[in-house]
Image (tube, rainbow, N blue to C red; front, side, top):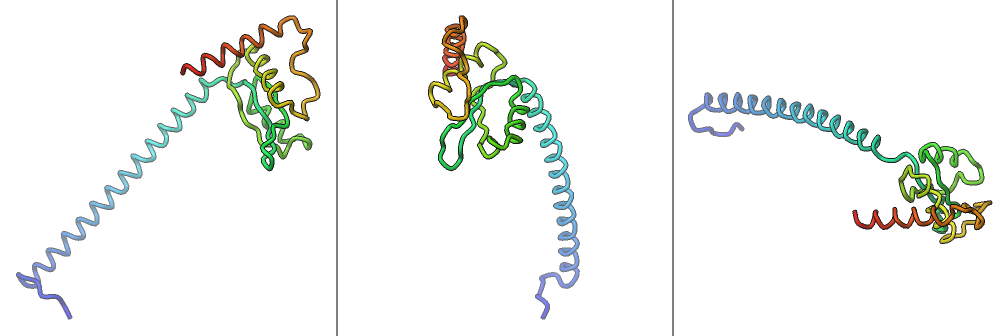
Length: 155
């Protein structure tokens, strides 16, 4: 049974035509939103790439046993992404989670921070001490790391 529409059948036809127009307008708006979303996503991607290029590539990191939470290895590198891939190929370390500790390209800070991590966690997979107690620059490296840590706390 058809509904009774005031104004007769012509009103129903006009209402249907307006509904088609409204549906077309909604469709066009959806495409405009998709295009704007794609442009915004591209802009976000570009911004993310710019930020990534500004971040230091090097730093310190920890390899963590995900089952126990134990830090099994600490290290430093000039290229964190490359080093993570190298550890992933190493059968002895492949199952460990790679966690970036600090990002910095300052060699002295990396040396000092690696030593600090080594002393804190005493990881079993580190074969050598990061900085020998006889290294004449040991105190400079540790001081550089402490200063870097203090500056990070103020950000």
